[in-house]
Each structure stands twice: as structure tokens, then as C-alpha cells.
Image (cartoon, rainbow, N blue to C red; front, side, top):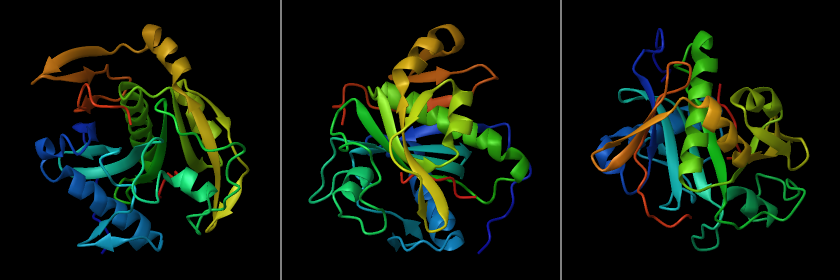
Length: 253
């Protein structure tokens, strides 16, 4: 079924970081995100991925991950998953490392120029999508919200770097966020998508945010909520403080 077009993206758009610890505070938002993932990756792009009850999921959707949702109310517009590179679940760790080890037959094992890190300072981004319901004129804005939410969540989780398999044109949009990044592997053709592993450095972003961020913090119900000025995406974080630090990355268009 083709999702109904949203015209336009509403002024109530926000970004929420979800975890196993806080998903109960956000109703069906995580379920809606997994449903939107199915619509984007399986229904629209015909990818052969696990699904059940109308939801897309895989072995990396565990308590070691976080999910960033861009949404207008309960309507999920975009999403991304962050997974700790220290994660381990049976034979699996995280997507890029498992591909390098030859565990995933859909991604080449030579995707990285170096050994995949296992480091609490490094998180992996995966399962990046923007739903087909977002009109073309709003997609850039929604993508900016999504990437800003990823950066903010990763920094709050204690990450210094984020590694992800991204569109080969990643340098065009990474720089707009004031984020330094570098290629970490060759450009590959995966099911018709030109992709490449990129390594994003958050330390440089932290320094620039001190002077450019315009972010304010307040305590809401015992959790910190970051409120940004109009020129930056507003972010509603619900990360558990004090927890141990523990996507193929593509925009589904």
C-alpha cells in the first residue's frame, strides 16, 4: 500500500531518541519506526530483510542500539539506528564488522580499509531512511533533522566517532552539518546503490557547537531535553543517564 503523502511536513516535526529503557514513554513510536522501515526497505526497495507483523527488524535491534525517529506526532518521517561497536549478540556484533568478518553475504568483506573497531567511543549508524510520504520539497529539511538527531544522540552516548555505510555522495551533506568525516573504504555498488563507509569525527563538532550551537538544556521529568533555536532541528532526547556506553547507511527515497 502506498503511504499517503504528507503536505507539507508540519511545524510539529521533532526528533526523538528511543531505547529499550524509554520506549514505553513514547507509545507506538518505535513500532511505527519499524513499520516505516519495512515500507521503505522491503515494500519500496524490495530488499530481502526479516519482517514480522508488518515490521522490519534484524539481529542488531537489541538493547545495545538506539533509534532516532524524526516524526510529526505519531507519524514517522525518517529514522536511523545507532549501535555500539562493543555490542555482541551470539555470533553477531555490528553490521560493518560482521560484513568484514564474512558473516553477512549481502555486503562485501573488503568494505573497510582497516580492522573494524570495537571501541566504546565508536558507534555505528545503520538503517537510514526517509519515508516516501515526505514530499520532495521537504526531504532536505527532514534529512537535516535526522542527521542532526544522530549527531546529538551519539555525542550524548559518549561517542567520539560514528562509522557508517553511506551513499557515496556523503561528503556533500556531511560538511553542511559542520562535521568532519573521511572515507574509510572503497566505493561499492550494492544492489544498484553507490555506497562507501565513512568515519565521522564528533570531537570537531563538539568544539564548533560551543560557539555555534545555540542549544539550551532543561530538565524535564528527570531527563535532559535539548531545545534548539529555529535554525537547528529541535531534539527531544530521552536517553538513560548513567547507562554503560555500549547502517549500511542509506536514504530510502
